[in-house]
Length: 242
Length: 232
Image (cartoon, rainbow over all chains, first blue to last red; front, side):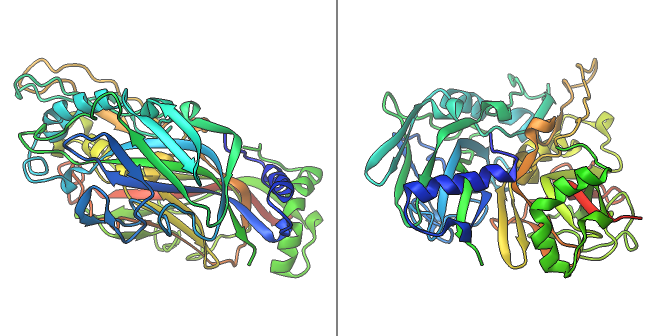
């Protein structure tokens, strides 16, 4: 877990002094921070999704009409944390269904989208979580290859759903709702922690090697739903003291 | 979370890591003349039905608002220095009107919780021009993490309406709280800014029959930590 005591953070700086070099680490600050990157899910299915390639203000890798904002990523540059170092303590993935009003007409304008029409999408997402491999390289070296990353590295946050409603007038609808594990105890802990130095490049991708990931085309009221897939690095950002 | 403390020895232990910072902020600062207590500062702002691109918190004071919505006395400032230990988001509505669900997305706040603005946005916190936090999907990642309410529903016996929906944004319990690490101090005169932003587009309220013109939905943020105040 992310440590709660301030002493723990300072202690880690001492460790860095021996591993990274002769910088005066007493002049650096060390704060909990999250670097994240969400991309649009390729709705036709895919054999690979890449993350952290397009920083804030760039066009989404899988949606040429969408410019990424701070809602999708806080990366200052492609495949790098920029001028800060980062101690990775947790890795999370997050399947985020776009809000109803950001969906296409045919979904956004229906009265029972959430309570009934999303059934096909939920069914597909429940399949998606069993698939894929998360591959993370730092420099040219592989550091993580994690199977079924949506299960292995869940977000560890999400709604508490006590019951999901359904409109019985929609024929055949089961009124499904899907989400990854919201339990903080399930978050993938990086132990020992991994340092990514300032300016160091890395790559993050999820590959689907057995079969392409599920297609979402025309799954909701004969319209294609839009989903974002995110990878979040949780840890401590190292910045010079100002 | 440390327990509320009162004794001088405990107070010294809590303050010591921040003593130099406090002395820089206030000049002479005598740790023997203050007491500590667990304290939270909170601020709620109205979420309009049409959505809004940016929400800024801690602007309204208890004098211009009321204790349900905030407990700060000076706009943009805390009453006393606070050692921030955790950070939470909340919402408030006078009536959620769960009994009025009609089988549609617009007749329940559940729609907003699972597929509305509660799912997106980004929360930013800036202290003295330095960005300390950027939290994506803040209602999920930094939930209230207290004892969330439970409402159990069963099938209705007539009409086309099946089982009623009910959810709460975020997880319950201390384990789900967003812990600040390392804990940091916000001085009573220190400028800070907390905003929730939706830069990818406004997210209107879906449950429009719940959030009717006479029932405002509020969203809020809360600092939870240890307050340092003068000994009296």
